[in-house]
Length: 113
Image 1 (cartoon, rainbow, N blue to C red):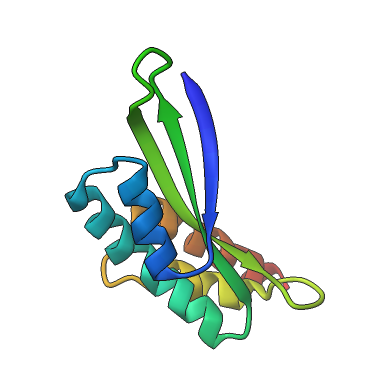
Image 2: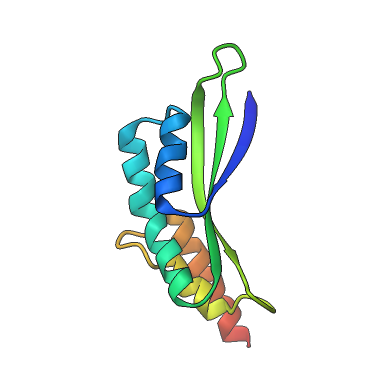
């Protein structure tokens, strides 16, 4: 397998990049549905944000056999507020299992503060 990462600054770049990688349309829609709320909430909270896609390619045919998408959150200065991480994780209407785990861990961290 050949693993590559791609960074996109906008939703349009993300869609076009995923199309160029040969990722099926339904998967592109799913990724947007899941990642755009994270992206938008992080932007609203004042963070620099981009989309990141990691792909595994088959070495023989160079086709994408698996991919994962996420949002990078980059603080303008200092660190990211744990409450903000929790809000961003819970931004989609149906947070993924990973989103729920992130939110839970941030909740536990906030209780200790």
